[in-house]
Image (cartoon, rainbow, N blue to C red; front, side, top):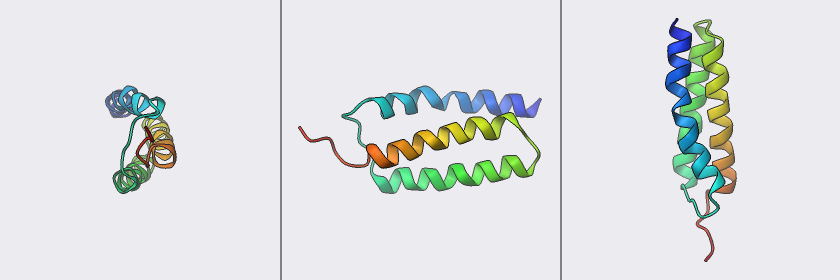
Length: 79
């Protein structure tokens, strides 16, 4: 039950991150996205450590979006 609740709660983040990832004019400083990646990795370790299955997969997808944002949206768009 908790796994489903945590999974549903984390699914809410994906549309916002997708909007940032897909918009070429989006900019998030690398320091901010890097800190978010550290936080997401910590959450994944905690969720796996408690034996949950679905929620670490969803959080890993969120982590992949943050990696993409870190790599491709870390510099201001050139006008």
